[in-house]
Image 1: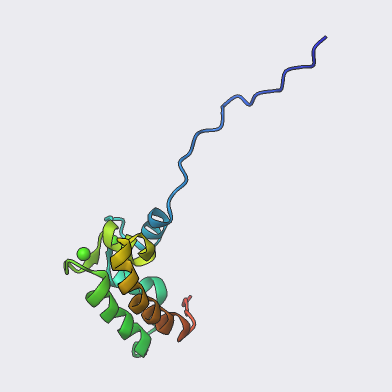
Image 2: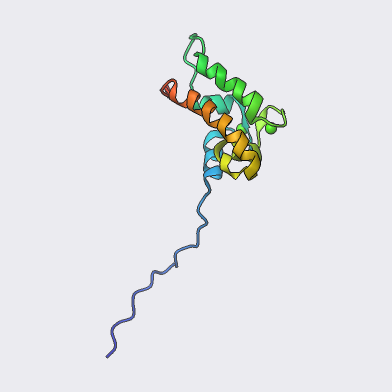
Length: 121
Ligand SMILES: [Ca+2]
Ligand SMILES: [Ca+2]
């Protein structure tokens, strides 16, 4: 006799579309779930304000970055496209990316390597 047929699970594995980095990032940072990342959510993801202490310099820098670079249409929050440009800058139009990348990179490095991220708790 032939071997037993393999035992199929009752429910076939669902074909789940993997969530994109963009989606995950947005869901992660977008605390109030409105589909946008506003300035407070953006900052809150990296820094939690602790009592009366003044914001460190790098947080101020991040705020400026948000206003200057992230929020391209200046409506005070990052939509999906703006977030994409933030986390996936390589998606830029290539020629343009080439020019912007250098600036972006050096900016990022400055910010990223400066202070460790204190996630208060
Ligand atoms: Ca939000
Ligand atoms: Ca915007």
